Image (cartoon, rainbow, N blue to C red; front, side, top):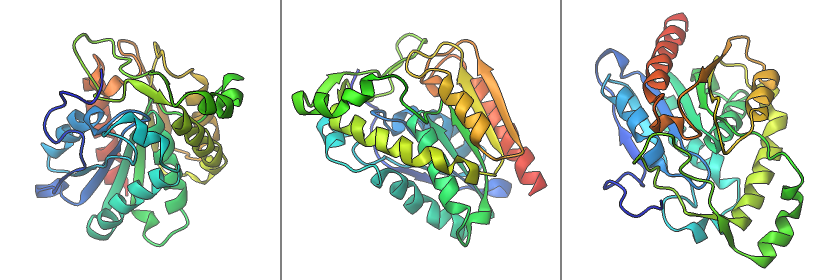
Length: 263
């Protein structure tokens, strides 16, 4: 595990312009904490091959070296997504945000922010895979002390059932980065009632990174009247690269087509 050996360009920002009837639909794919754009590239390519306009941003502090994630503030994460979505809102007829893990929180944060902005009506829907919205338990309360004692802990990445698959994320968990993550989640959860666009959420039954409470909170507190939860039975946390990837890809395409037809 680690960023070494990633396919060329897969740790960087990725952009592809659409073509044909789907060119006017833009989709941003947002990776998770300690992960990289590589975890979202196959999903993005699936939509690119069908003519959609796609963006896969590298979230600040990621895709380089793990120490960099100790040097960023959480506000940089949604700011990056908003910079990427701005031209899509200007150019496309409709926009979707897809997020994995912490990328789910990032998606929700940006969706809530766009709800009150000019152009925000172009956000047509969001798709989340094993999204994160809180860190349960008491250990996080020791986070400041742990961060003073050590800069890194063993990583929780690469929770993938399928053998030989790598998300090319960090092999160390940056402790100061975790403190920023917790602040980000605490700032995002109160925004959930502002999210009213259609929502499709995929949840892995066997997720060794996040408890199901994350999915339950999001499904309960997001204000969307159109929200669907689908269970994944043959994947772990990074389901976008796992055995159930096709289920995610195919059903997210159906979701985009359905929402687009009704908008």
